[in-house]
Amino acid sequence: MLGTYYYHEIIRKTIIAFGTLFNQIHIKHKDDGGSTYSEMRVPLAYGPTQKFLARIEQQATLNKPVQITLPRMSFEMTSIQYDASRKSGITQTFKAVDANNNMKKVFMPVPYNIGFELSILCKLNDDALQIVEQILPYFQPAFNITVDLVESIGEKRDIPVVLNSVAFQDDYEGDFSTRRALIYTLQFTAKTYLFGPVVENPEGLIRKVIVDTYTETDTTTAKREMRYTVVPDPIDAQPDDDFGFNETWEYLGDSKSYSPTQQTDI
Image 1 (tube, rainbow, N blue to C red):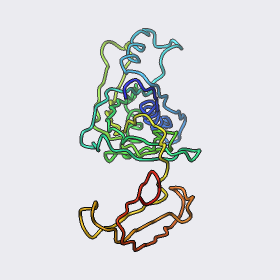
Image 2 (image 1 turned 180 degrees about the vertical axis):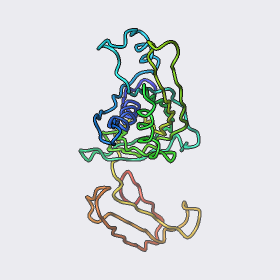
Image 3 (image 1 turned 45 degrees about the vertical axis):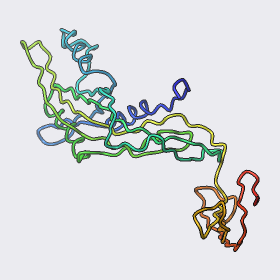
Image 4 (image 1 turned 30 degrees about the vertical axis):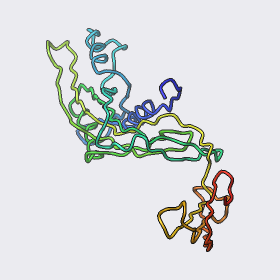
C-alpha cells in the first residue's frame, strides 16, 4: 500500500471550503442619525495571527499608507487528529462509477478532525461585534459544508464544522501612539474523511446472481433441488439508473454443481 502515489487534495479542499465560509462578511459605519456612510468587506487571509500583529507593531507611525488595514480576519489549520468515534471497518470497500462509467473500488474512508482557528482583528469594538454576530448564529454548534472529496468518483460529503470556543483579547498597551488591536479568536473542528487510492475494479458490475439450494447440508452428496437466478432489467442498467429485476426458479434434482469460471453445470 505505502508507496502507491495518489493525491485527492482532501485537506486542501477542506481548508478552502472553511475559508469560503467567511470571505463575504461586511461591516457598516453609521452616523448619529442611523445613516450608513461607509461599508466594507472584511479582508480574509490564510496565516497565523501573530504574523499580522507583528506587522502592526512594526509600523510605529499611524499615518503610513503601508499599514495593515483593520478590521481583517485570518485563519489557519491548527491540528489533524484521528476520530475513533466515527471509525468504520478498515478493510471494507465500496464500488463507485467514474465519469466514464468505469467501475472503481475504494476502501472505506478514514475519519479525521481538522482543527481551525479564525482570528478577527479590529481597532473598534463595534466592528468586531458586527463580524462576530454574522458568524455565531450559523453554528449550533455545527454548520455543514459540502466538499467534493474525491472528484474522480464523484464522492461528495457534508462536512460538519463545529464551533468549539470563542475568546476575546484586547492588545492595547502603551501610550496613545500605540495602535490598538482587538482580537476575537474562534476555534473550529471540521469532521472530514480521508480516502486512500482509487483502483480499477476488474470484476465490474455484478449483473447475474445464481443460487442453488439443497435439502441437505452436505452438498457433496446431496442433490440440488432448486436454482434461483436474478438479473437486472434492463441487463445493461447502471447503478444510478431506474431498473427492476427478472427472477427465475428452476427445479433441478441432480447432483451437479455450477462452475462460475466455466459458467456451466459440472
